[in-house]
Length: 178
Figure 1 (cartoon, one colour):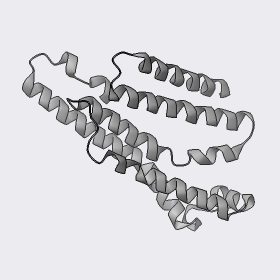
Figure 2 (cartoon, helix red, strand yellow; figure 1 turned 135 degrees about the vertical axis):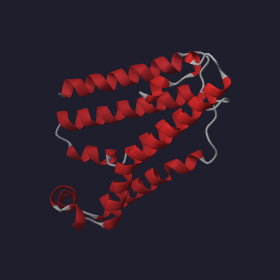
Figure 3 (cartoon, helix red, strand yellow; figure 1 turned 90 degrees about the vertical axis):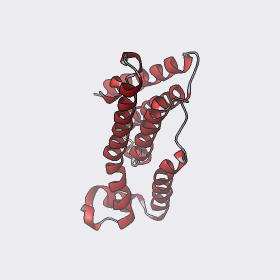
């Protein structure tokens, strides 16, 4: 199992480098590379945590959906935009991730290791701090929400293509939908 995680981390990094070597390099290429490096880093952290029994290493991965889901959405948005630009206000998508991690740092500072173990592993969900649960819920919901937003962008793009082109094969992003 550990070997599969390591292979996945290396593969993600390899694909990120392949995308970055592509010429001309567009904004969607850079966003995809960042997403692949993020995936590679997350897998590497999981591998090291499992291999060396360092559970505390997994804490920084607590809210990574709040980073990866909007990043994927922005990648799709840049792909379907004619000028390959990010939508206005794109930085707002990362505020929940920043807030969750500031809160996580505050939690790590204010509790001992024993208390953290109690909070994360022993206490039932409803007895944990309210903000911890709120950020946890936001993290869980970010994937379906951003997948839905991405899907909506792709459907709108598909309708535009059908209206403009008789041959849509080269401009249809079916592979992203799949």
